Length: 143
Image (cartoon, rainbow, N blue to C red):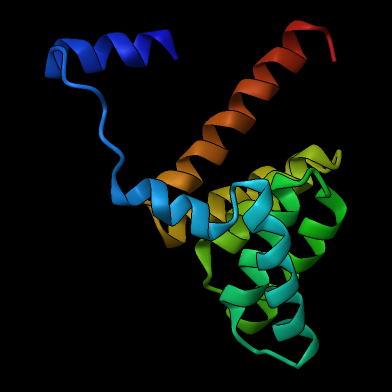
């Protein structure tokens, strides 16, 4: 974080960082605990009511992943793909969860497919780079 503050200082001088709209969007998305519970409730209600919207399943999977419930996140991401097989982020999240669930090759393949669907999506690139980093560390440790 220090390097980010230094970069901000070089670009903006003594002006403090301002709170942008993206901060509010992150809060509403459920990245803060007080919003996560409510978001999980609403999304679960939608899914239980028979939603066929892939975004409901993907958003639910994202929140589950943030709460470190990897198995449940993997299941919901896979369900999102039954409603929209070209949902790149759902495929990328599924691959990332698979990788962490000891399905490394399958996970890497899913992330590669997600990149083919949405080659400019930053979140998918993040998952790709995170998996590559984990793979390098695993090899260095002799695994």
